[in-house]
Length: 73
Image (cartoon, rainbow, N blue to C red; front, side):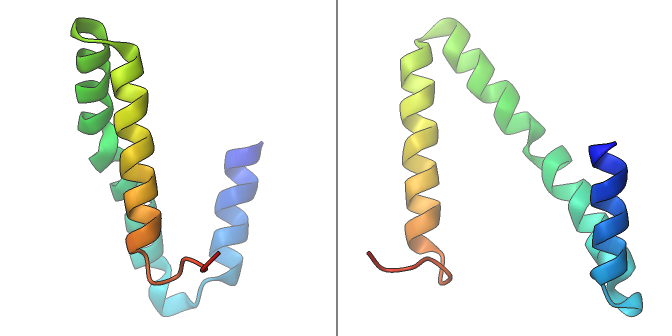
């Protein structure tokens, strides 16, 4: 139900000439990041799970701080 509502809402608020781009980016980004998830799983399997969580925390903080849309604290 959530997926159907999400797609319907996204298509209702998106301009008609941008529907293809929005839908393709919505599919490309999760599928494009799947290899990183596999890499994180392999690192967690062979090294340490704690290392994987630390790496994901670091990349999240770095991405948030590099974003021009982040708010200053």
